[in-house]
Image (cartoon, rainbow over all chains, first blue to last red; front, top):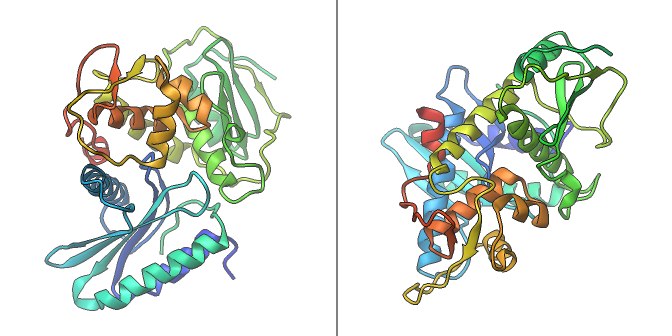
Length: 136
Length: 213
């Protein structure tokens, strides 16, 4: 049984078909709070930092357009991969980004997005995690 | 208890490598304490960064573990970025434990990587703002309609006539690092102005550049 909500979160992230890498990042600082990835996969720090920059630019755009509401998620389509960035707040004053990188040939984008949104809701209800990065 | 005269980062690394438990004190006005538990850094505090309970989060509440981790990295950034003071004594007491509850802590390597990443981010901002730069509220007549985040609003209403990111961090209970980054973003939006009078370009801050350069 998972012994923390972060373990539980990544347990469910692992179930997304085509998963290459997933990580949880503090959007305010860019600090990686936990990750799951294939051995030898690309640098989590780089992917996480890029996700924070992208989320900030999108927030800046919506802010300058004075568009109602904040960022929910960003879908980036590369030739071989999808990068899904989901924003959520598990506790007051916490603003996290969950980045999931998927192999495009091995995943169903609509299903993956649905899973991401579902686990976001359950994680927020389950409280904040306490664990450090792990590798599969 | 014993004393040493080596740089703080070296001392901390040696204590972590040998699996020590206790408190490493850094004396002086810019000092603080770093707590280890079997070599893992479980907590750090600095006289110049807020403690985790400065914010709304309380021990045991959701988010407490993150608040402790963020306060620890913030304090470590402050302590490890100070001028090397090898002549200062840094007593290590093996019996002291922090009063922050059960936290998993970080390895020395992970802490150092994160501190170096943050130093890279701050060096991008240094020409325009540091934690101790005085900023003022700015109200240009040509500012477009703009939507700010909850945190940005909290900062804007507290700036008053003038304030530094460090003062604001203590007031709202956020880390000095995250407050400095957010103040920089408000400078870019021209909702704040710095005492230096410089206006940063939009592409100055990049977390990605901080880990790839």
